[in-house]
Each structure stands twice: as structure tokens, then as C-alpha cells.
Length: 85
Image (cartoon, rainbow, N blue to C red; front, side):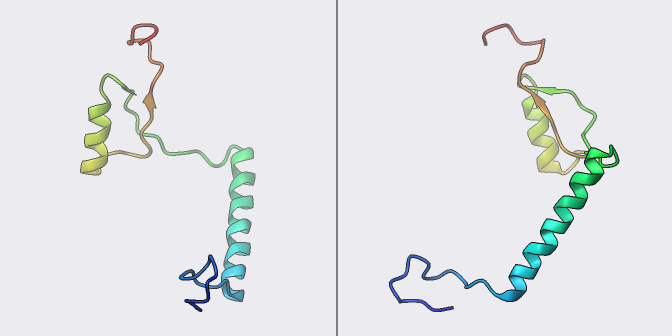
């Protein structure tokens, strides 16, 4: 890494050949994930709880306590909210 050259990239590591190979590998992984998703073979794990803005504190606690069983989804347009609120 070269620093103090006056470049706007001072302090940032240079891109090496190995990091370019890593990017290619990441691209391969992303393409495979997209293929699996399109085939319906890649399904996200979602926590079964129905969370709304009314009980968003429960979502926060689940994250803090690491008790979520997958990704948490907070429904911001839930039927239990008054229209326009």
C-alpha cells in the first residue's frame, strides 16, 4: 500500500490479482444462487412470526436475543393499523 502520495485513494489497499480472482468466484456464486432461485430451489428462511410496527419491539428483542429462526419481516402495511397512520 502506498500512502502520502496525494492520491484520493491514499490509505486504501491496492487491488491485487488474488482479489480479482475472489471477485470472479463471488460472481460465480451469485450466478449459481440466481439459477437456484429461478428454479425455486433457493428459498429464504423466514421467522414464522407476523411482526408489525405495533409489535416491532418483539422483532428487536428477537434480534438482540438471537432467537429469530431466519430473517425477520416487519409488515409496515398491516391490516391492524389505521389507514393513513
